[in-house]
Amino acid sequence: MLMIDYKDISWWYWLVTACLLTAGLAGYPQGFVLAVALTVLQLIHFGLRERSLTAFPMQVRFWYLVLLLVSLPPQMQLLYWLPTIGTWAQVIFGYCTMARLVSLLPWNRSEPWSARLLWRTFIAPPVRGNILQGLPPTQA
Image 1 (cartoon, rainbow, N blue to C red):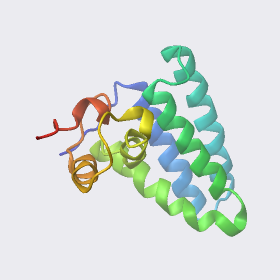
Image 2 (image 1 turned 90 degrees about the vertical axis):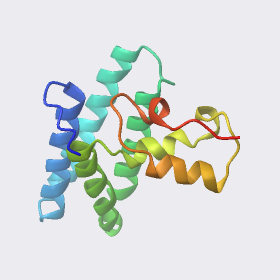
Image 3 (image 1 turned 180 degrees about the vertical axis):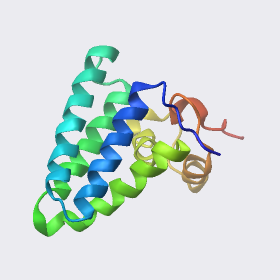
């Protein structure tokens, strides 16, 4: 199912970021630097919008920025395949692996680690909003 949401500023941020990362992988390394810069801008924008550094959208963007920065040194740039593929999945299908990973951090979950939790987290269909709102309920 496609989740192209051209009316949402967040979707546009992710689309441009995906294009910049793709340009970087295609041989234009300045694309990586521009993707980092755009992610910083996105982090500031959402920080002002959310008015909380701990809001889930802020956490996702922060950890995404960390991944981009870890991948920035030339010897690490092979890692850029991960956010590039993941960002295209977000832009086209609304599936955000980073959001799912962040949802598993201790302060974002209310149940203990389990294979069932991991399974539900990664197979849950994409939802509008964030993955915390779209996880299926736990079953006793």
